[in-house]
Image (cartoon, rainbow, N blue to C red):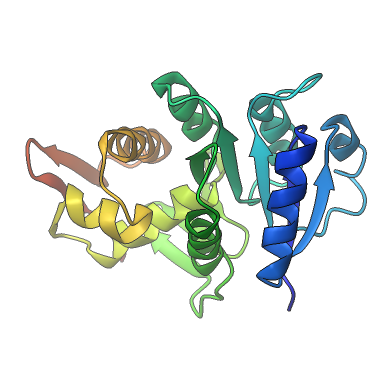
Length: 228
């Protein structure tokens, strides 16, 4: 299967270089200089595996475009390109549900590595697709967390973190281990991103007091998911 990438980048020189480099790595790249063109295909021919979106674009910025895509395709992985190393950019992207970000000008080899790492996490099939977690059920194929009071559509990153926590159920997990295994890096921004996702999971499981994700200051988290 050839991986199909949607690239939203209004800079013609950088976009062309990036497209050519990705194609050398045997990716199929559809490049849009006008992000408005992407919105027209969202409900029709949208057969992409990952999106690379520049944050600073005319007409529609990368954050707004990501929200539009994720509204129609909640499971779609997104990597942001940003020319600014500002915390607000990165945290905004993470709150939207993006999987990663990289600053421009970026090292092409680092970009390829980040893309492959995201795909490695998002493309593999899982033998067990229905997992009982307390009063909830997780459908790993649909990224759907179900409860009698309603359903929650997870992002890919949220499900990855939840599955990692389930794998280490009733154990103490170090923050560094989570960051190195899921984000493959450990810095301030990824640490903040982990806190955002942990906070979301706690809210999702609010209807079952038996489910506990406790923070251990300076260590990590203590997990207790009743699975029977």
